[in-house]
Image 1: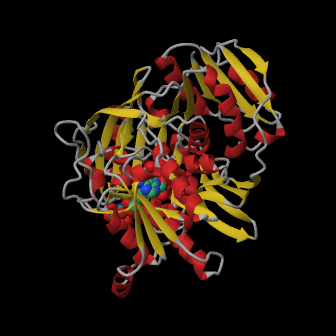
Image 2 (image 1 turned 45 degrees about the horizontal axis):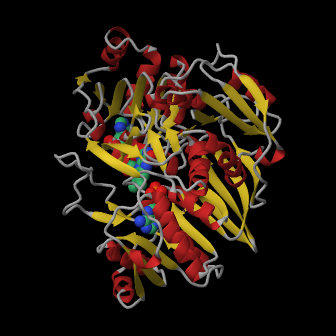
Length: 246
Length: 309
Ligand SMILES: Cc1cc2nc3c(=O)[nH]c(=O)nc-3n(C[C@H](O)[C@H](O)[C@H](O)COP(=O)(O)OP(=O)(O)OC[C@H]3O[C@@H](n4cnc5c(N)ncnc54)[C@H](O)[C@@H]3O)c2cc1C
Ligand SMILES: Nc1ncnc2c1ncn2[C@@H]1O[C@H](COP(=O)(O)O)[C@@H](O)[C@H]1O
């Protein structure tokens, strides 16, 4: 199972709403979270290598989430599950929902992105692994499966760490895990005929109440305009005598 | 109730990032205890006890915590946490890995990468690559928090004399095991705490050309950083990456060389005190955040800068 999230396109700069209630997403260009594309690409390669039989893309979200799942199907996933809710759930609640789906579907591996580029939480995969009681491998840049275990290279602050995890596991993809494939038009057409299950969040009977209340969303202070210097010597002079940083 | 700060360390030394998390705990208020989990980590516990403002240090010295595997460490945090109102870790790859696992086991939300403490239950955190700041209020009775280090000064590493108490607990989940760690460059000045950082982007064209930046950095006592494009192109290893998905830093001086200034890169360096951009494209977005911009070919400007220093 690959968990995918619909987010604001990474090329678009987020605009804060004037009333401070959030970020304005009306008419904004939305895409699949880039890290989720890496997670899905890895799953597709596993199926191509004969390690995985079937790939489910799962997403929790409102009406338009279907578009993101269709993109996942066009990339090559076999079927899609949308847990439908218009509420913006927190990672803990998302993890509870995804646990429920992973168990119902009896999946052997969950791949997620390391971070959703809208909330920048970097939590869901870790939380899901905890709720399932499964192994966890975060920030993966290389994954090799060998029977009931996998060897994973993780991108950590000090460099690269290699760990071995028992299956089943939850893994979160870093951007250097792979290069996601492009979707071709025939794939888009094929994706329209692939199965898409919709499950109402309420029908799962889970406690998905948010624990955090967003009181305000504001724009950070901008930086004052700087100057263009004309030469390296002017730059060095300014750094020494004006900014006094060297 | 009070605060529990999870100490990040390598079984020898306390990571600098932890000192910033201690400061966030001070701002929340109440007692501060530290949790040191590791293997043969006595020197870490001793150092932790000297951090100013710390009440007690709890040490779980056990092979199962030797490599900080999230599955094992989370079980310990879950046992210790209920005595506290706040559990904090730095928002490093260490904290990001283990804290959400522990939070979920406790059925608590996590408040990721706080940049400000408004009150004991209200915090500010960046979203959308730092293009928005959200103020959030938590209703959980234990607040699980990771701390963005650049927004909190480091607590004094000396001056405290906390009690050190050995504890046992947690389980070996037997789910994963550590194999190895590759650290590419030990001589490099630490990127996250450096006062000056010289970063290169795709414009550098090769790993060899980063030698020019290392030379400038050596003269300035600076660390070398990079954009994602430079890392993806294989010029430098992943730990050099600055940005939304790499390291978030705020040195006194950041020199961006051959970096265009994408949103995701700015997210990691725009809090720097002084920003210099060297780029031959006068339209590059990096100039919009630069205090000093130099429109020039880096292959001429950088050697000249090196000579001028
Ligand atoms: C989800 C996501 C997360 C990301 N996370 C990060 C992140 O954490 N960090 C990050 O950096 N990026 C990140 N990126 C990538 C980011 O969007 C940009 O692609 C990247 O920062 C570009 O790197 P660059 O500026 O080195 O390369 P380019 O954008 O290609 O810019 C190269 C610059 O070098 C200049 N140049 C070329 N030759 C010379 C010369 N001879 N002299 C002077 N100047 C020259 C050019 O004018 C240009 O401005 C992320 C992207 C996504 C989608
Ligand atoms: N609403 C969602 N539906 C499905 N997967 C999600 C959702 N939110 C987050 N995820 C997964 O969790 C990853 C990390 O998200 P986050 O913890 O929010 O930073 C994403 O890349 C997705 O793989």
